Amino acid sequence: MHEIVVNLHMHTRYSDGTGTHKDIAQAAIKAGLDAVIVTDHNVLVQGVEGYYRLDRSASNSPRTSRVLLLVGQEVHDQDRDPQKNHLLVLNTNRDLSTLADDPQTLINGVAEAGGLSFIAHPRDPEAPAFNETDISWEAWEVQGYTGIELWNGLSELKTVLHTKLHGAFYAFFPQFIGYSPIRETLQRWDDFLAEGRRVVAIGGSDAHALDMHMGRLHRVIFPYLFHFRTVNTHVFIPEPLTGDVPTDKKMIYDALAAGHCFVAYDLPAPTCGFTFKGKGLEQSAIMGDEISSKRGVTLQAHLHQPADIRLIKDGRLVGAWRDSQACAYTATEPGAYRVEVWRSYLGRKRGWIFSNPIYVR
Ligand SMILES: [Zn+2]
Ligand SMILES: [Zn+2]
Image (cartoon, rainbow, N blue to C red; front, side, top):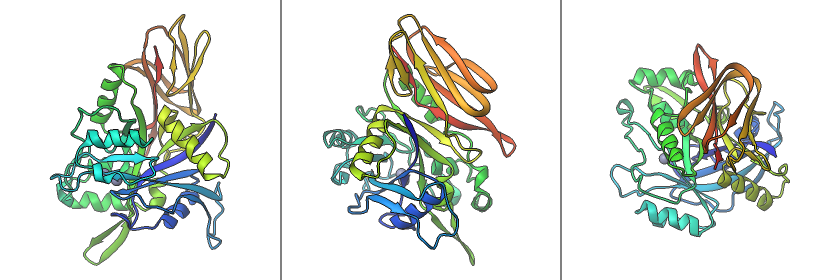
């Protein structure tokens, strides 16, 4: 398996972002990403997918010289007040925003079109100081979606925007924002897993490169480049990226559909090299896979540098290893086992890695 770093959920001028697809590609290459998935609101932008190369004028030499840019969309009912229930729709060839007025119809439509659907910013609090309303997901009765956006960069920002002064502080020191997925979202995911459901977790930046005006001060806050160095989704694909767009696109979407990925906060230190595997009597599994519990399954996690590892089964902590680079646990009971890794950064212990579960059945 090959690990690639993907940033997904972001907006351009086609909706409420300020940059272009080319701006995003350039920032992504500078951040060392392998792929980005652009998701403008209620529009499927055609003709921009493909590999982008670094501008010759760029001065530094980043880790990669190209990035794969893919396009999905973020769909919600614009006639609804407040405008809740945002769904990330990936890997469809047609615009599905016409189905926006009913979340279940939309999810069914995505599945029929062979696409993937992720509940965007499941809990997204209001930020009254900035006239931002609560746009959480409310239609929790829906079925048949691929997964949820466990960690959304913008929702997390809204949790700390208590006053305009907080906004100004975080605009200049955004590295202090990242802490962990919102607790309620994490709890809801664990509840689903404990019910035996398969729900894939992804991390989204919700990057807009917003323009901020305060008096005569004008600044692009949270530029794409910053977002691309923070909450990413690390995806495991069977072969290295080939450079052929249809082949690579299929590998990425197949892996996301299977949950072969983890959510990472890459700002404190790169998370590349993290693994979480299960070994049974006859089978082995990576995150997202199912494996038989017969005669026990050895679950192992590895990191490239020490941090605090927590193993969680159906929402319950079953093992903790402080300041460790590896851990092992024998699972004899069926359940969804997932790993969280926490580490210190800027004076605070912060969430660093949230794996998808290994489903021991
Ligand atoms: Zn949204
Ligand atoms: Zn968005």
